[in-house]
Image (cartoon, rainbow, N blue to C red; front, side):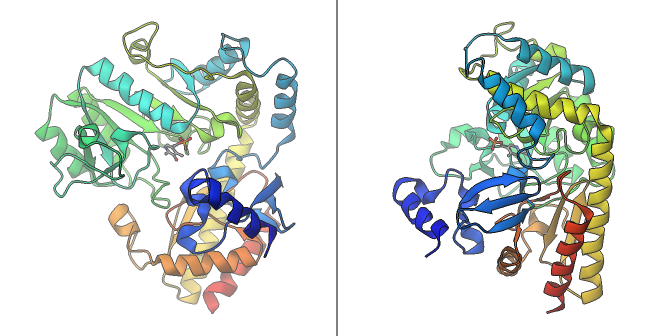
Length: 425
Ligand SMILES: *Cc1c(COP(=O)(O)O)cnc(C)c1O
């Protein structure tokens, strides 16, 4: 038995499923999770001393590579001054200024502790601001695990959402409407049906939780126009795309303005941080300025802010990181596409900047329905082959592959060779 296996066995006795977040259990790839002991740059090392070239990057935060010295040193320095005060600090001001100055449409921002919390709070602010209850989300987009957002699509577009998890009362999802990603007509029919009741439309501007599903040309712009026309708040959930597609996230990358934006992952540099921000008149509804209540004992925590600020200021001061990452992604995922074509593999490669996914299907993947046509058993096989070759991919089909600034062209060439060998067999 390996050390990972022994530890996982112990974990399963005292932690539900042995993990603190379900996908880590390796359930959908039918393997035992590797217990990670340490990481640096593009690599992670497990408790048995196996080293992996990592394409998860803590699900996005490690855009500079693991354990980046600038971030680590900022954290160490912050620790010397105390771990938490539950009071206002200079770093929070600097962090908010950095974001508001350099990201379009963010006039004010509030720090929270996770992406889930950011989205939950942004929805509340949108409802408070508009005085409306209904929200529109897209099937296959993930926005964290708060009650209102854990919905299955109803059988018809007009039906209210059905909870997608046990423990979520029907009432909590009754005002959540589902639309189909990349299908603007489904959004239009919801506005036709409820012209004065929709508080917000929320989406991942690049779908990254059903595998990577980029928006079709014009899709985001059309949602923007509908929200403007009907007075609904447009929320971009940029927990993955924020500070990844560029410093201005998807708003900058696609040139589409959101009213509210939610952040997580990269914004904390590896610490538990989320944030929501946007237009002043909406953010001014938030307590203590306005009537929308939202609070957090550890929000804006000094150590977490130090990590996030170090990472964001580095990204801000080095725009070439984004040019490099996006170019690397275009090349790398393009090469995988060519390999699949050359070897006649039945797979589809979607990508946007440094995010990409291989779907084991013949169908073009544009939404959740088409993503679901993927053969997850084939993904599990591919995952196992890559893991045994020292490549750590997301342990589930419907997740992204994350490139970081630390992945070198040589390392990526090596991965392409492995993929070529895999698809040849
Ligand atoms: C990860 C994620 C969330 C949830 O963030 P947590 O920090 O895990 O709570 C929300 N939205 C999107 C798009 C995400 O990828």
